[in-house]
Structures are given as C-alpha cells and as structure tokens.
Image (cartoon, rainbow, N blue to C red; front, side, top):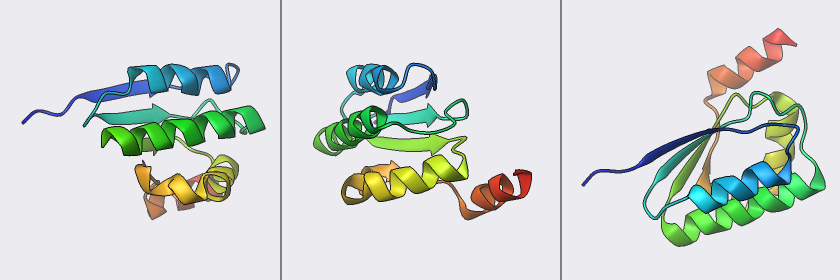
Length: 103
C-alpha cells in the first residue's frame, strides 16, 4: 500500500492561513511534512489552526512531521498543542541541539 507524502513550506507571514491550507491538502493515511523554517514565532491564530490540523490528522489517520522548527516555535507548539501532539512528530533531539547552538 502506497502512502502519499505531502511537503509544504509554511510561510511565516501568512500565519494561520498557511495551516488552514495544509489542512485542506491533508488526505487520509497521508504523511505530511511541514517546513517551518520561515516561521520565527507562532501567533494565537496559528496555534489554533495548528490544533485543528492536528485533530484532522488524528481523524484521518495521517501523520505530520515538522521540519526546520526553531526552538521558540517548538516550545510554543509543545505547550499549546500539547493534548494533540501525538499527531505531530517532533524534531530529532540532535536537530534541536543544532538549533540551540546556532543561536
């Protein structure tokens, strides 16, 4: 059985709208990679959209991986989306350590 892989670069300037578009593209059983490297911080609206996306992923048995997450965004997502975080695959520990060293 083949799994669809969806790769999306999230534009930090578009905020919640970018996550809403990601939700529209999410298919059942798909794997989605969200590149957050251009997202310097998350707003309340973005956090709410990300929670909706995580809930939709759970409903559709889809998986979401986050790529290029800076440490501040990572912490905000982990706290803000905490209850739904099982749908989101976090960064590998070495990638987080790399982000810290680059600051």
